[in-house]
Image: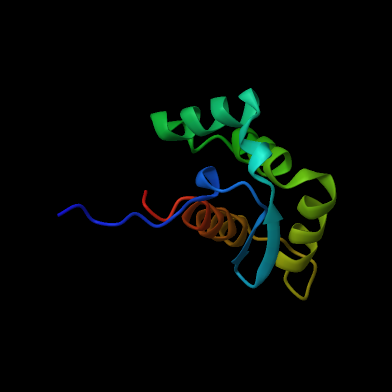
Length: 102
C-alpha cells in the first residue's frame, strides 16, 4: 500500500495561504514557475543555505515586495529589532507549509 502524500503548493492551481510564526502569507502557484526560485531552492538543498544573501533574495522573490515587507514588520520585536533566528524560523515554517512531504 502506498502512503497518501499531502498536497503541496506545487500540486495546486490556486493560491495557498500559509501561517508561520503568526504571519499569514499567500503564495500563488505560479511563483514556482520562476527559474530564479528553482535555482535558489537547489542552492539551499545543496547546502548553501547559510548564505544570508540567498535567504533574503529567496524570501523577497517568493513573497513579493509587499508581503515581504509586511512579514518583516510583523516579525519585529517590540524594540524594533528583527532577530535572524525569528526570520529563519519563519522561513522554515514557510518551507514546511509549501511541501509538508519534505
